[in-house]
Length: 263
Image 1 (cartoon, rainbow, N blue to C red):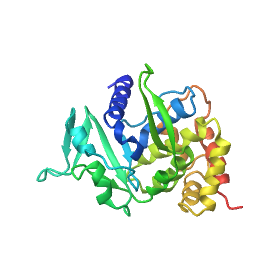
Image 2: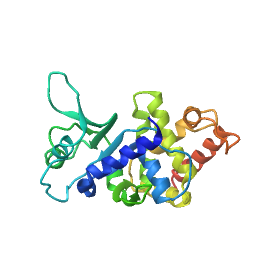
Image 3: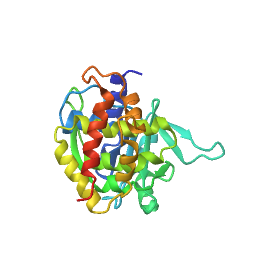
């Protein structure tokens, strides 16, 4: 499936759940795409490294909906993927071949969330996920033809980066670790205001959020030959703009490590 098709599906999903967007936060692999095209408004190569469309849900839900997300989407052209063969629910919904998933954190009141999402949809609970949901901004995005606009919630780029710094070590395989570290590198490399992002990250540490981040980054990016640099270099691939990609990765994470140091 080419990127234009994937992009069209992404916008189709936004249209299908338009009414629920105030209570949803876009998370995951589509964030670099949103940041570059609609927040930073810079032109870079295709930044999407996963086609899955993920939404985070926090409390409280701001309004009562006449239909759940499941009722709305199941009436459209979504397929249901059953997680257990002997049970009808919960399911993951797919738009064509792309999963649309919902994520929250363990301490949330799941009954309140289900009033909007529906008990039939799988809602994943992930530790530390409350952090990006509580440090978010609104971004106005539009289709290429500019005939439709959507106001979506996203984690602040600094919060997205900082959260990845806390959680990449928990990923179950090197491939997912590499993707998470690449997302961090992407922000460190392409953000037009990296100084502000590093200031915000320093404040997160000072305020006591996700205190494992400095140790994780130091461990993986201590030297140019460290594991983190190698994983990001592999995920980034050949780069026509940078002669020594691994050195660039190390240098940018060095600035992050410095921002995470205690004063």
